[in-house]
Length: 115
Length: 271
Image (cartoon, rainbow over all chains, first blue to last red; front, side, top):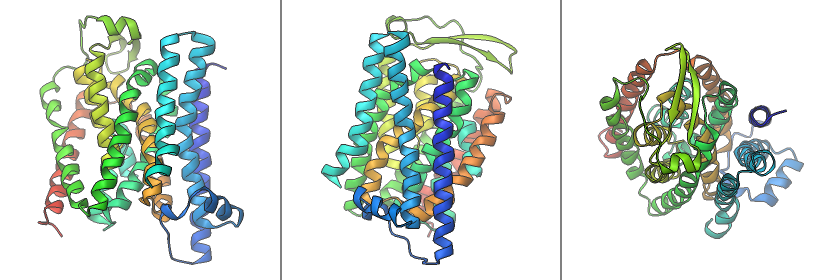
């Protein structure tokens, strides 16, 4: 399987899985009929995990969002690994892992400092 | 769904159409509109990109080498948005959003005539970063060779694009397409497809901060993503069959109309 197939598959799985979770969460939300929505700042990782374990509709939706956010991260990782393994292109190995680092700083590190 | 369709047709990623619709027509508070748009941008980008990669219209080297600029810009942009929100100045965002929409259409008028850039000479960075490729153009019915040059200029353009993405919760595809099209002289179709590929990476970088700021309303996001995705999938399917010129005209008219409305809203003329 070549890189383009793998990347394409990753994107597709990410999108389908996250849509499924988001739609499931939305259906549960309306079935439960709570009618109140809380914004994302409430859900840190602990509360998110707790919510998912208790089938909280909002937590399931946010898990879908999390999957969606993870998709491009995995894609960049795949590209980076590809430049290490098959292309052996040093410059692009550095570039891809620099991009990956910037993404992870934005997604994981900064929210802990600022938010 | 309309947002997704237009988004992928123009390489905008949908957010730029979605946000004004949410704010102007559905009365959603600005920060939630930005958050929803940012997340749906990742969805459309990934959805459309999974199709583009197979068509060989998007160039991964060009994408990755420029994403250094977009991701760092996105971080600065979303931190700036946080400060603006804390100071209760979100109306400024509506005005900037509208201005950005209108501004981003200007270079389009200048370049409306050329379909594919010809006779572009490679420079130092073209060779060093291998920013080149070939694709089959369905409208012209022949293989087109292309070369990307002036990488540093492209990188600056991408930082601005990333900043706008983080600040306005958009994929900032217009800026990315402009940077590639105008500064690096890449063909419109390559810029569009590659930018669509980059949009998800940029938007994902801002999403952690948006999440912790509380800009993401789960129910609103969940109601929007599936529709936007469906629209973008339809858009991708037909992109390669349309002439570049018609694409640009469509792009331009929609942007200007939405931009004007948002500015009016921001300064308080529209309720």
